[in-house]
Structures are given as C-alpha cells and as structure tokens.
Figure 1 (cartoon, helix red, strand yellow):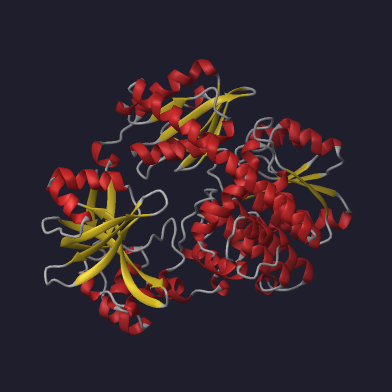
Figure 2 (cartoon, one colour; figure 1 turned 180 degrees about the vertical axis):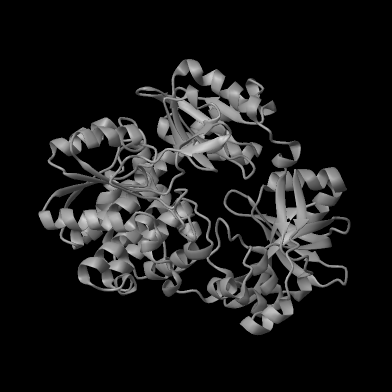
Length: 593
C-alpha cells in the first residue's frame, strides 16, 4: 500500500524562476530536494568541480599526507588494503594509481569475501608485514578495526585509515562513547570531531581527496590544479562510479562529482572501464547512474561475490586493450551466473518468510545456510523491496554465520544492531546497510532481539510517494521535458520528479515487450485532451486492480480499444519519445489509484 503526499516546501518560486532563468515548477522541484539558499540553488543547477570541498577540511588529512610523504621519501613499502565491493575496488584503484604516480613503492590487497570477510583482519596484516610492507593504508574500511590496528602497531607498522563508515560506539550512561582506532592518521568524515561540510561521501571520494592533497603537496600545486590534471580527471571517474555504486545520496558535492564523472566517462581515460562498457553493450554517450548501478557496477560486484575482487581491480589496471577485453568479458559472464544464483536464493528466502510466518515480524531475519554467502546483500535488498521491511539474510560462511542487511528509511540499521551487539562476533555498516558475523546458535536470538527492540509503527511501513507538483498533463511540453534535464543526474537523494493528475480516463491499451511486461495506453483528461502513457511496473498487479475496481468487461474493453469506464488518479513522469524520426511527449505512469 502506498501513501501519496504532496511536497509542501515553501519559497518564492516566481522570484527563483526569474533569478535562475528556470520555470517556477522547476524551482519548486529543486526546493523539494532541500535545496534552500541561493548559493545551494546555484550549486545544484550550475555547480562545477571548482565548487568541491578542499581535501584539508577532512580531519587528520594533514597527518596522513605528512606520513605518506615521509614514507615515499624513505622508499618504504606501502600496502593498500581495500574491500571487495564497488566502492572498495574503486578506492583501492584511486590510491594505487595516485601513490604510484607520486613515486611510492606500493601494492594492493583486497580481502577475499569468504576467506577474510569484510575489512582488516590479522591475517591480512601479517601478510603485509611478511611481504615487507612498512605502512598500511586502508580504504573503505578500517574505522571499526581497533583490535587489528593494535596488532599492526605491535608489529611496528604504521597504519593510515581512509574510510567513510560510521564510527563504532558504546552507550555509557545514556551517552555515546566513540571508539576511534589508534592509527597514525584517521581520515573519515563521520568522526565526531570532523567538521567536513558534507560527510555523506563514499570511501572512493575520501581516497580521491587524499590523492589530490598528496599530489598537490608534492608538486607544490593547488589541489584544484591537480584535480584538473590527467591524473585528477581519470580518478574523478572512479570517485563518481563508486558514489553511484555505493548508493550515496546525489546531493551537494556528490552531485557535482557524479555529474562531472559521467561526462568524463563518455570519453574515459581508462582502458578497463572502456572494455567493460563494450562487453555490456553500453553506449558511452548514454551512460547514466542507472547504467552504473544496474549494468556496469554489478559486474564488478559479481567477481567479489563469487570469486575474488582482484580481477575487478586488474581490469582498471590493464595496460592494453586485449587484456582489458578478456577481463571485462569474464566479469560479465560471472555476473550472468550471479543473476541465476540470486534468483534461486530469492525464491528460497520468500518461501521461508511465508512458510514460517515471518511476514508478521517488523524486521525480517532469514537464514539460508546453503545460499552463497556473497549473495546475502542482494537478496536482502530484494526482500526489503518485496515486503517493505528491514531485512537481513544470513548464510553459512567458512567461520560461522555471516549476513548482510538492507534497511528502510525509518530504521537505522547500525544503531539497532548496536543494541544487541553482544550477539555478534563482528558487525559494521551504516543507516541503510550492514554486515555481520555471529555464531549459529545466536541466529534466533538475533531475530528476537531486533524485533523486541523495534519501534517501527504501521505508518513506517507504508510506501510514501512524494509528489513534487500536482500538475495536469496539459502543462507538459517538449520544452518543459527538456528543462527537466537540468535536474540530472537522478539517483538516491535526487529522484526523478513526480507529478500527479486526478480523473485520468484510460481509453485503450496494449501489452508490449518480449516478456509482455510493458503497458502502453492512450488516456484523456477531463477536457478530452489525449495523451500517450506507458507503464513499466507490474502489469499483472495493474490488471488485477482494474478488474477489481471496474470489472472484467471494462478491462477487456480497454485492451480492445473501447474503454469508457476506467478512470484513475495517476502519478507520472514525462519524457521524450523518439520513434522513426517523430518526437513526442510520453507520460510514464509510476503509481495509480
């Protein structure tokens, strides 16, 4: 069930329209994204790389740069330890490319999901020590690794943390005591003492800022000069790729990084990224956040899920087209295999929820011992979408039970897990996603504890549809649809705007697509103005709803082009449809009632 609400953010839309040369409707949409001041509006519409925040605003950046410069000057070996997801791979590549460019003796290690688990462990530190590494630089991990960093310190190693995850804490007398690891430098915008203007950046952006600051210091240039160099522009692509892949909100500087990075990717400087586009049939000119989130990104994640993410890193490090093409082809095949395994696991998860009555729980905890542990996060995300509830999927790992969680907006996953942290052997994450390890005998306790502590109300589970403007379709023109391009890139934190109209009559329709899963309709408003509307959602559910509301005969009549009785309110988004040289406006129906 969805609850429709009209965004009611207030401002002088006419004045903003005149000042920024946009329509009042566009001004209202931007205001709905919590863009308040004129400076924020200017940055949202016309922000450039020059508007990014200076790297030295990150706490401990000066310490990290001083350490790295000293180690480079002394010829000490630096090992970068990353993570096996998109953000981890991109972060690792950024640091490796940047440190190498600055003359560092450096190599990389990415944890194996099954053998190592997430982040730092003693084995990875010992391997670095044995290989002669003097210094470890983490990326996209490390903030929750206090014990491991103590171990590295005991070996006489230097550790620099670059991360973006929440800082672990303990509740003592109602106050949070944060536990910052005892590393030589900790660069993480989530630290309590950090005053970075926009802490919601991914690990790759943190790594990017480190390289900008380091290179600028070593070359006696400004960080903006480095950012606009060949090195800075290539690494910007990977900061953008990771921002999308890690589902960061596309607000503030994230929006500028993604917007700039997508433009750069159209003529990418990286052979591996170009090969991955070729392998997946991606047209560089049409690359968007969706392309990275659902086509390119999953190929990188698949190798970290089913094997080792090292091959994803090797893709970006490829020095010739043939090598890049071979690795990209392998990653695509692995992702195709991952899709099949995911579907099988999802079917098992749904069956367990329904057979054991878990759908009554506020928080879903599903234990699938035989499902590949690397697929837990994807399946948890699909379960959250299906049931509209926070979901954890647990599997049998090599050392006990491992799992991943995906949350809804009202449920802070990391905070809720902290309330029962005694059940875990390891855990970490943030508001909307988390990972954990625990003994098998604690699985049921974990489910019970989460639900006992849960304060979610029935309203929290309702899907909230936020309508930007209740706007009749007659106001939509080609020029207006083109103006909406100013809002791109769309994604988390900056969704496509939604409009609504009541009393839309459905005149005729047909089902399209190879899988017959697209509905195309001719609709009319109260004044008999006619529009084309398309629906990419669940066609079966739509038809069932219309049969219940309007009867079998009227639905049949709709698809025979003789409908007179079907009338619904719709939430829609307008887009341009080009077919055989003809350009027209088409409405994309998102919701109906």
